[in-house]
Amino acid sequence: MVSCCTITSFLCLLAGNLVGTGAVLAYLLTITPTGAIWMSAVLVFAYTVAGGLYSVAYTDVLQAAVGWLGCMTLAFYSIKNEKITAPPPSIGFPSYKYPDDTTCEMYDGVPCENDVTACCYNTDKWCPSDNKCFYDNGAYPFGDQSHFTDQMTNAYSLTPFPNAVVFNWANIFVLAFGNLAALDFQARCMASKTAKIATIGCAIAGCLTFIVGIPFAYLGSITRVYYGPDSARASFETDSCHIGLGLPTCAMWLPDQDGFLKYLTNEVPSFLGTWCLIGIVASSMSSMYFPFLGILFFIR
Image (cartoon, rainbow, N blue to C red; front, side, top):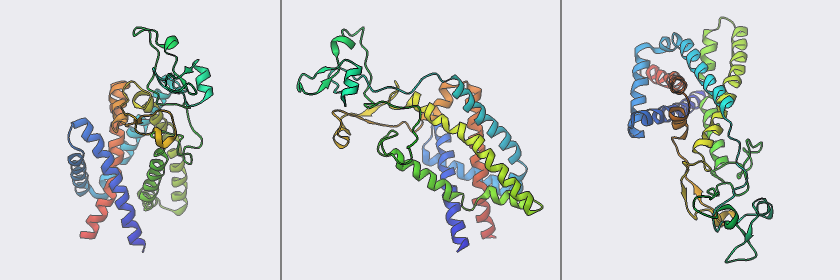
């Protein structure tokens, strides 16, 4: 039973890291995701065969120091230097219908041409001419916030709504179940001389996880500022979601799967972006060696 749980856990862990590393390689090398995943698998397999457990034991300290420091440096740099705040309710565009009276009053809305009971974008005030026109793409009909306290339970707290909450829980499940075998836990316990030292090491590692993970998680929000639904780079599928959401008009945002990688390579100093990418890839490679190592032990 324990073996089956461990194997299943390792498969989830291996799959997640292969896809993540493959995404980075596919973007940087402009190759297909499938080819990048196979490349990652070959590299990690060769890395494991060449050194086994020692290949990680002797390199993890350097990988951790370089990777963690790079990710944290980028995170704090981005948080400190990012001045764009969360967007308010959308001002809309000509003929845009406001979702409620509050938004209508905020932008001095006027009765719509085809429905006088509804409130629409005030073209005379906000877009009197092509050279003087204030508008947006209507991505936030009810406005946005810098953070949501109910994003794990409210399906409409994050875009692309209402799917983001499902994606969040799926990620947590994969990461939690993938770490059920806890390769980092095993490595600390095997390296400790006593149970007390192992316990202290695990407690310190848990604190470091929060210190590194929480600032780095903010990069997701900052990436959305540059490549999210209200950015200049956003793309949409028109008239695709307003009926289901009960909104007067709406277009489904098409998320950019490479948004975070584009942020690292285009929006921050190149050495910081490169430093963070090295940390991500190094971390993934050191995480993937354990499943491969298990397979080698099984074959032998």
